[in-house]
Length: 457
Ligand code: PLP
Image (tube, rainbow, N blue to C red; front, side, top):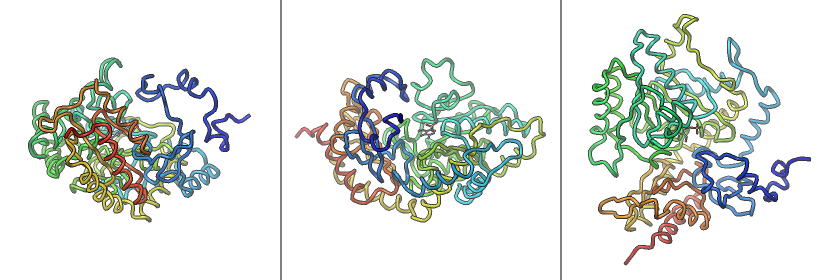
């Protein structure tokens, strides 16, 4: 008999005992039972909405996990996956083998990727993309005769994934605690955080130069950064003068610049890739999430012509010994091609830029005077609203206030599902979210903050 979860007619209802089974057998990401005392059971997605097993319709304020760019249940994406499953569900791309969807996707990405990025390798996740970037940067330097260049400089508040190296590159220390020693040759510098750290973007970027000089440029392989910090810091948008200076510094000391566009890629911030906002050219760009609108896992990296030339020039025995069974999975590549086609055909990056400005304005209008709203920031359809206990001193709410779960519950009760990272409400709705729901998001957030933190008159 088909399991009740897999039976589409019954899937909208919660099968008896699901909660006990969940608690007993499912380990969730960043698992702690306290988070699952009263979990929601999602059963369906429809456009900008998620629907739970009790039939509640919630606006999907985070596009699933910052990835469902085209909204739920797009027939074209379902058709692309189904057609490819029927044609060729799997073939590997090792040792001279290739397939149409893999070649077509790499070629298409070479048209839309940041300037200078020429060739692509595919993974199944953003964490594997980070592993691949770091390995590739180190491999590159040894292949061109500089094997001492192995250090990776990352930033505080960054999130780059949960595998061994990716967790060590991540700038939130919790991810490395209790899992044994962190991966070697990785260091962190402060991130630009315009709300909390005074100074210009150039001054924040100069901390990279200081770190390179302290370590010795001959030992530094790469600098890795999310153009807008997402899951680690709560949507931190840098000053406009930050990344141009970063590029100058990387050029000066021959350090590779890895742009982690896992959240910001594929139109989220108003361009195909967010580095375009500042006209900077990465040596490696990494991506995942939105490339398939989250319908099937796919990630990867794109590399510059200089790195591609090194990959091609290495002697066979010293080749880039890296790869995964599912690299360039044909079904994932087919869904990615269709996602990109729709993003392009519907002008969704431009729409994200336009609607993002409007939504940011509406959030400001509703919240700028609230005494606990410290900062309202965003780029495209990616936003963070940072709450503070005291606006003058920017003092944070303590953990005893239980602020994040209280806000999450209030937002949910008002019809919005999204992520609250400690004291930052994060928003990243599907790029296709209709105007009425975008406005509703701003109104729900405004109402929820006023309800949870009533301004004292
Ligand atoms: N890099 C960034 C910027 C991310 O936001 C994430 C996940 O949120 C990752 C890497 C890791 O991606 P994944 O969860 O697919 O491994």
